[in-house]
Image (tube, rainbow, N blue to C red; front, side):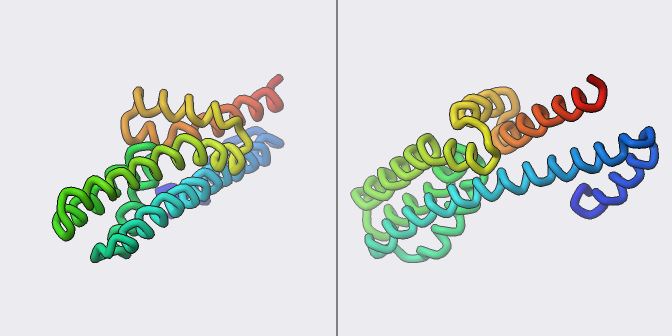
Length: 176
């Protein structure tokens, strides 16, 4: 609904605002949308890196369906920490089916190393840069979001935290 009717909703809300406050609301809504876009840009970069590593390993091992394995790993990467690992498990199953247990263990190691290194070392920096927040905040907020909100909490904790901090700034500027 927000993608389709977001503009209509924002205009209706602005009409109900006090004179001079409508511009602030519009500015905040634009800022919040930018945060969401930038967060998912960072997630896309991280997902692409992990999927690329898994695809290269699968290709080097001669596994079939490499594009499918890459796509599943890439899409799974939109869920921080666990998504790319779960997506990478398809590569493990394919490796076991095609090449045996040894190949399955090898691709599992690749999936784990790629996921752990990228998600814990690269992702906080990429997300931190795209949203202009400290990488440690990204790690902590994502962890708390996952504990409190499950999968949805993992996916939305960081952008909602940034939007919340910016909302406080807008409110202070407007009323403080």
